[in-house]
Image 1 (cartoon, protein in one colour):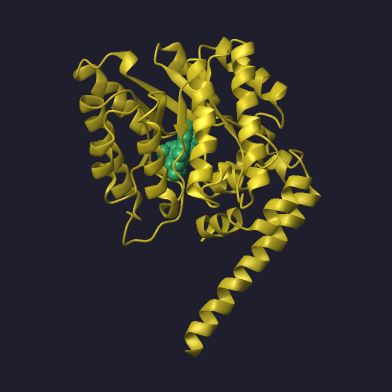
Image 2 (cartoon, rainbow, N blue to C red):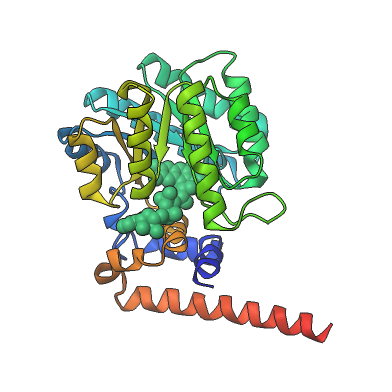
Length: 327
Ligand SMILES: Cc1cc2nc3c(=O)[nH]c(=O)nc-3n(C[C@H](O)[C@H](O)[C@H](O)COP(=O)(O)OP(=O)(O)OC[C@H]3O[C@@H](n4cnc5c(N)ncnc54)[C@H](O)[C@@H]3O)c2cc1C
């Protein structure tokens, strides 16, 4: 129920726009590394000093007009420049919908091409984040098209999809991030049960470590991390074949410990004003994350926003189910 609530809230455009107005005062600053480029560079440098590399995400959701998508692209180009200027150890993660995938495929492709080109000139990798199923095929298409010109790109495989192994086999020669999957997908296409998702996740990790290019294992799940540590040891997989990734602000001690133990570690560093959808998805996957940010988040204003939204969401659900009953 809570998962559905936060997933519902993550897609609420009205709340998304409303939340932007409050900046990071609502407490998202513990999981979002600032609103502007100097702030994010400072956060990256702090992580670099601990032996941690970064992948930077200029946050953005619900972009349906060319102006905003172009502005997002320009901002990402500036981030690449700033990473280079500051000699920071970081690369880029992009959500294709932020740079126009919901507007027009070619427009989006051209935007990402500019980003990949600039990154390539700076010897920097670009990851295409994987969003919901609706965008999956086109995201793979972007990868196919761009890889005819560039080799500094990769994407994400989400273990909750029944077909994840097929995707992995097809894209095994790319640097891939493997994740459990963050969006709400139907049971026709995706496992719903945590046990099934975890089992598939492990299967994918093992397969890519043995057969694929560089693997980024992106999880906060210590059981899976411990399993991977044993697996690489018993299969003599060198540390330069893989890395662990976690999100900024989560399990900071474990992040530092893994880097300290000599594993490649990369923190996913989101920044910008458009933090709302990202933040709600984090709450959806683990409502306990509320504890992490509770003190800062739940001031009066936030309580009001989330309270009103939760009420509206639940009312919507009740109305729907009453309608169904009436039918
Ligand atoms: C770097 C990165 C990039 C990602 N990119 C994408 C993407 O492109 N597309 C996409 O769909 N999804 C992405 N995700 C999200 C991912 O799909 C999962 O939704 C998310 O990581 C939650 O799953 P989990 O593997 O971390 O473990 P979960 O299944 O959430 O948790 C498993 C267990 O780990 C422990 N645990 C988890 N979190 C914590 C915590 N904060 N503190 C203490 N213990 C904890 C608990 O014991 C929990 O039961 C990304 C995740 C990461 C880390």
